[in-house]
Image (cartoon, rainbow, N blue to C red; front, side):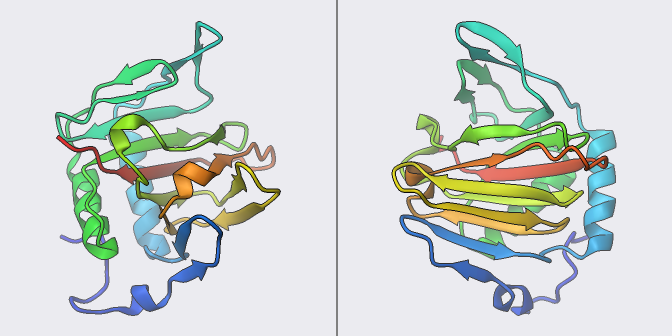
Length: 208
């Protein structure tokens, strides 16, 4: 059964895309890529069925726990290295595999691995960074699906005084392509008033 509710051949979601004229990047947003009922059900299943872990990264030569929980999932060869740590992928969960295939088909970009992050509330966050690890290749394309509480997503240019921000609702799909990861940083800041959880899936491609 498809997670999506669109009929075969329908382009309604494609027409709903918001394109942003951003220097050095190609960014598109579908605010309602998944209906709210679907995104809520999917969030509950992923929160309860995945093996979440609060992993550590290296900072100033010491391992530090990240302020969220995560799962790295994908094809067996998709080793991922960042912040001084190496992560081996968990086997595919059927729902995540299905989502990966459907988002690949929808966007026209092939994805074979996913980083899932679970934020229990607005105190949990992710700092400024770019998804520019060597194994992702040149100008990697990142698709980001948000489930759960609406959170602020921010970008800033590395060399110019430009910043952007969106409030990403549950079911929204954001696509970052072009030279975005080379020229821009992004983050999920703290929002102390948010008490509900959020699950975010970022779809990537790693060559064999």
